[in-house]
Length: 266
Ligand SMILES: *[C@@H]1O[C@H](CO)[C@@H](O)[C@H](O)[C@H]1NC(C)=O
Ligand SMILES: [Cu+2]
Image (cartoon, rainbow, N blue to C red; front, side):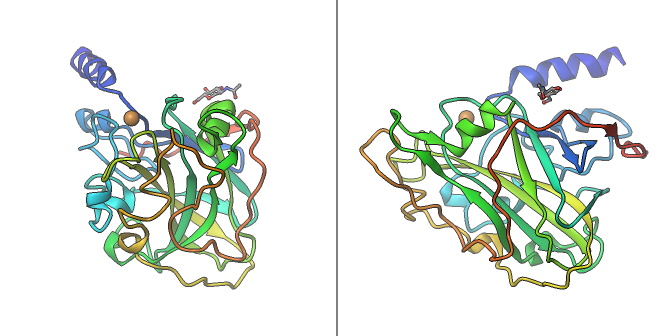
């Protein structure tokens, strides 16, 4: 036990940027994945996809946007459990404290696993975007961005599951793109985080999706972007948002009403 605690201490000093530490699905709290879990035996089972190589809480750079690392972060492997949620309900993604300098858009995608997400081949997932927020107010120095809103709401982002989609096992791909270095080639920073959702629904929509490796290119206007220059607008990169997606105004979410049981299956 002492051994574990020591390692966790070492890992936390390496924290530089951020990860999703947990989610709250329709009021129920679920633990996310933490790279330090690789030092715990047996490893906790979480709804968050596993990214043990991401010990520095790092990012995916544009030169890796066409590789499988852009799907669910660095060498991600499947989460082995899922959070149940009904279409039309909301869930919150709780980040570790996000650095104020790391301004940029927040984007959310879903992909139907067409079977269990615990075993799906991530490279086959076809994603449709359900919301995306970029520059909210350009009157402030460097702008007020989705990330500023996220920080103001206790490092939390709320996502509504589109009410019309068909039931099924889905992966939610939640992402921040930080633009503080994006004026230089290969300077944008993508922080994708995936969680498994078991979505119940009376809907029937099966929106077409695209592979994550086709989302962005290094020279997209929203990827090669000078945050410290003069701008009046921002073009959010990536595929169009699904017409059935629900974009809400972000607020501080209520505290969870319950914690999931059985998540730490061993
Ligand atoms: C802020 O988020 C943390 C977890 O990231 C949570 O423990 C805390 O209760 C939240 N505070 C408020 C006011 O919601
Ligand atoms: Cu960073």
